[in-house]
Image (tube, rainbow, N blue to C red; front, side, top):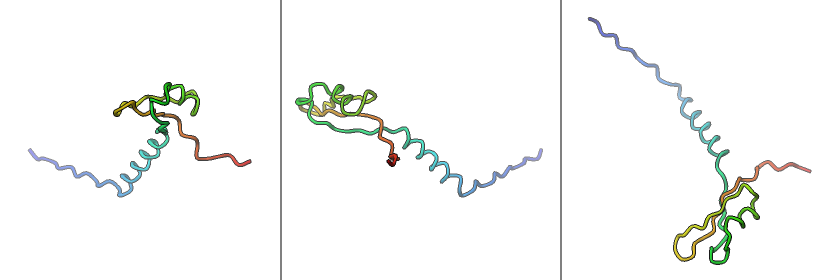
Length: 85
């Protein structure tokens, strides 16, 4: 019984860079922005303050990293393409 050895062709040297470019382009579009507004001791309604500052799609949480914590907002990044008037 003869055994055939199949040789696979080497992928083009452009395949992996193209995959990474597509992957990073998709990730950049889906990532949001973050902002630190200040101490949760001063900002009593972190979520409401984030919505007021960045819009209704924003979310805010008090990151209890010690002490009273820090108000951190997550929101959609503004478009880098601003219309010219």
